[in-house]
Image (tube, rainbow, N blue to C red; front, side):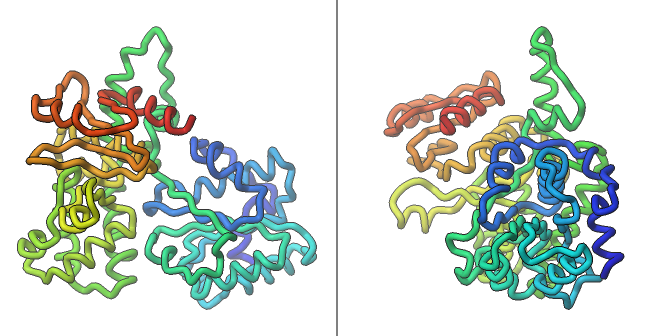
Length: 395
């Protein structure tokens, strides 16, 4: 196992190249960094290749270069590695301590990628937590597998979802700096961002084949293989229908009829695409029976992925999807009354309607917009408007 662990941890041999070239992300400073010093197990969730591993490596970089923490006391492994199959987390950690001559009293950091590939991971993490002097940062690309925890880590863990690059990060990854005197350029670059989305590697390479490979991996490996689904062609058709319905309401029964599958299968596929962070469902605002009976609206995990498969250039729909991803932490619902729809109503009673650039509310929308009781109301037309709402909520 020595060779495998050295391959994952080049900083043990003073090889820092892969750490120093990392692009920093907003999530690192705002959410992850403040949680590197407490005892809680940190779980990072989100779409495959969305940047969870990079956030782990940024944490390792911070520990080594800014906190001067001993490099040999930091272990990173990806638990979906075939070469590590059959090894428990506790066995890997014990071997790591032996390799680097670490006492049980020595503080160590464990970065465990794709933690849910390891059976009984929760019990093992609890054992490590209870032993003390161990800080664990783990990741998973499956929401359902993390949700299925038995409660052993209740009060001992915190979970963060990693989202695609935001607009500012998109500019940074593309090494684009816009002077205040050139503020008009934001319109051009923001539209480019809406089209390309925020999948980090895709932003850097602009290689369309990367998106196709990414989604094939999720469909074949994370959904079909893990859950024993043999109808791959139906699963892929289901995915394409989801992309076409992004930003619109979705009928699980209707999709079942279109694809010639049972309603139960349609519901199962829908849940699996949600669990792998490809789509996000939004319920209708209202009484519980209205929420349960009404169809859900869905949004894609990334506008670039949606555009790759639909080929559409509907700026209003892309902007609404961007706004949802920026504001999803507000626990959003949509409003629907007498065939009139408003985009978002938050748990804290904020009403938000997306109208890209100069688009206006219809007369009926305006009447409903004025009628809805809300703490505050916003019409967002560009990325600055969305960020103002984000700042207001955080303040």
